[in-house]
Image (cartoon, rainbow, N blue to C red):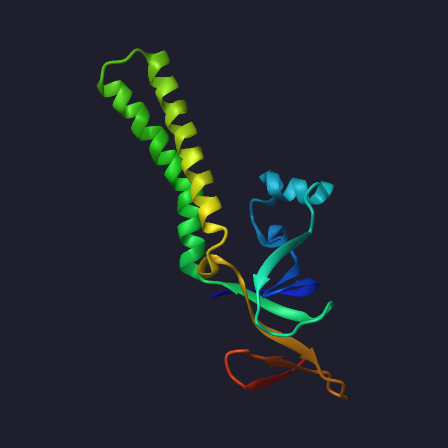
Length: 168
């Protein structure tokens, strides 16, 4: 499960809206000077905070620190659908037009048409999947700050009644 810490900013029935702090790895990347992402971060163009709706059956309040998670296979399938599928359809439709001995402008139009069709397929699939609970992020655990001399942080997992303590 891929996890991300955040803070609850809104509560609704069966779910919470969590604000996460987006992290940039630009400082550790060797291509930071030639990368568009690093430039956008330096200019402040991109918003640094993200709002994510996460399913939760716990009683949470505004300001609670939580850890949200999404299954790796869900993320991988989504990436394939959004990035790889349109590219494959674009190439396949162009190749098909080329194999049918179409002239170059028609090969280009076939590729663009295939890309447009794949975009509609991705959009329809996304709308159907939006309500699927198995594909949504979930609250994995709630982070509770414990007052004390050593500033321990306790993590409560909703799957069991286990408390894990760590000293920071």
